[in-house]
Structure formats: structure tokens, C-alpha cells
Image (cartoon, rainbow, N blue to C red; front, top):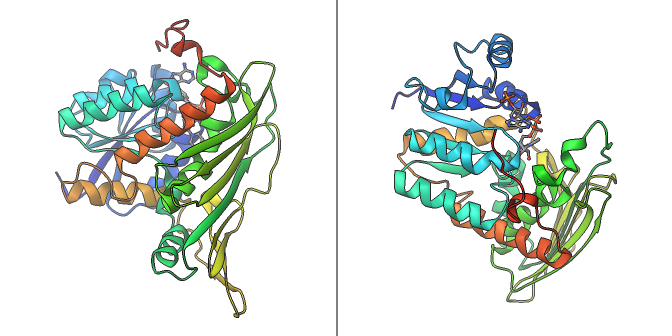
Length: 336
Ligand SMILES: NC(=O)c1ccc[n+]([C@@H]2O[C@H](COP(=O)([O-])OP(=O)(O)OC[C@H]3O[C@@H](n4cnc5c(N)ncnc54)[C@H](OP(=O)(O)O)[C@@H]3O)[C@@H](O)[C@H]2O)c1
């Protein structure tokens, strides 16, 4: 593989645009190709980001010999299918969050990557931000003592008309899969991905998906994480990790944090600021490229077994609310 890593993007929506902008800040990245369902959108996106190879189908993008790694930026129900298309065509894949719709799909996707011996990673970009690296360092060094409690929330006010896709069951909508994955993933980073208990509740809206939820994770040694997410309610959007000797406050919005406050017993709180260089998506892209250059098949910071476990947590929470998506009931065929 060349030192310059050549990226392709599948999908041309909101996050595809942000990722394309982020890639411009990622050292060693070249945005070589885009794939869309139509020629016009591929051309328009290609024009906007000066991408030479513009494909009018995802299949054609996957087959592009000038692409090393593909970023999947389609809605949740197509993550598995689009990722597998690329893996089977010999590409490395960075797939948007939530990794898949449920754990069954995650297992299938990871099995495919392992069979094809290709790199795959869930695009949980928060993990790769500089200040979140500092949080990991502080926790691992024992600075706050044993971490015992985490609280984090991601809630925004979505409009039914403007943000309709966030609510639609056929797009695996609802707060949990859309944004609840962020605080749950943060808890997993701190306490591990195997809670011994999951206690959750949700308020389902008029389309039957969760507009507000609380998911409490209890870990084998008694640690707890209280997470919540919402798509019709603006919440503080911060997170706090409390240990036996102090705490770390990740300032809002915690999923693209630049600032933390570390409070240790008997000391003045210390504010640490690590401004993003770029729009934040460049860090996960750089981590992918580092892994590819080192011939790794997964990321040590966002391992595949953890992504599988996280989907299992989301499944269990949804089961407690009786929320199953149409494709899980065999009622809807998610073809593009
Ligand atoms: N990491 C983050 O910060 C972040 C932020 C927002 C969203 N996301 C994730 O990224 C994914 C995409 O979200 P988005 O907000 O970018 O969505 P979006 O604006 O609706 O764009 C999705 C793109 O996927 C393609 N697509 C394929 N099949 C589709 C279908 N049946 N309906 C609609 N679009 C379809 C379309 O591209 P073509 O027309 O070109 O084929 C579309 O532009 C979601 O899984 C979401 O959770 C992540």
C-alpha cells in the first residue's frame, strides 16, 4: 500500500460532507473517490471536494482499484451491507456509528472482515480526540483513583419534519442508535464492554421509536454508568467520570470535546484544553491510516469485539422497551 492512503466515501449526506472536510486535515490522506446512488450527486459531491473518481453506484466505488479504504456514510440499515460490499472487494472499511442495526448484524459484519482479512472499524470518532486520549491517560494512570461512576448524556431537539429520518423505524431511528451510542461507548471505554446488568427505560414517540431514554449500566465490581439520550430534548451534553480520588468533567459537547476539568481531592480543579486541529473527524481517519500502514486488521482503541458488545447493549436496552425495527421483524427489506 502506498504511503498516501487513498480514501473513498460511500454516501453523500451530512456526515459524508463533514468527513470529507475532516480528511483535508488528516496527514497522508487523499480523497480519491466517492460513490453515490446517482450520477448527479456523485458529480456534485466530487466537484465540491475535488474528488477525481466519481461513481454512480456503490458497487462501482467498491471496485475502484485506486481506493484503499472506504468510509461508509449511509443510514444505519445499510452499514452492514455497504461495508461487506467493500470488504469483499478487498477494501479496508471505516463504518459510521452505530456500527450496525443490532448485534446479529455486527457479528456477521465482523465475521466478513475476518474472513476477508481486511481492516474494519466503527467510526466512533470521539475516542480519537486528543482530550479523550488525555482522559484515558488520566484514568489509566490512577489519577482519579478507581473510576466508579460515569454520567453522560447526548440529547438534542429534533424537529419531526426537518429531522424526520432520526425518528423513522424503517431507518432504525430513535435516540439510542443515533446518539445514545456515544455515552454508552464512553462508559465502555472507562469500565469495559461487559456490564453485568442493564437497566433502562424509554419514552417512545408517535412513530414508535425512542425519543428519550436512560440506560444504566452496572459492572461486575459495582461501578455504574448512567447514560441518557434524546432526539426531542436538549440536554447538558456533558459527561463526568468520578473516581475514588477525584473526577473528570468532559465539557459539552463531550463527543467532540476540547476541554476537561480534573478535580482531585485537596487540589484546585485543573482545566485542560486541547483544541481540535481540523474538525475532529481527521483523528479517526489518521488512526485508520496508521493501522493500515502497520498492517493491522483492527484498531486497538476501537476493537471489533467491543463494537459487537456495544450493539448487544443497545439490543438489550431496546428489548426492555419492546422496540424492534421492521427489518428485525422481517417486515421491511432494506434494499437501496
Ligand atoms: N459521526 C458523526 O458525528 C455522525 C453524525 C451524523 C450522522 N452519523 C451517522 O452517519 C450515518 C449517515 O447519517 P447522515 O446524517 O449523513 O445521513 P444523510 O444525511 O441522510 O445521508 C445519508 C446518505 O446515505 C445515502 N443513502 C443510501 N441509502 C439511503 C436511503 N435509503 N435513504 C437515505 N440515504 C441513503 C445517501 O447518499 P447517496 O444519495 O449519495 O447514495 C445519503 O446522502 C448514520 O448512520 C448516522 O448515525 C454520524
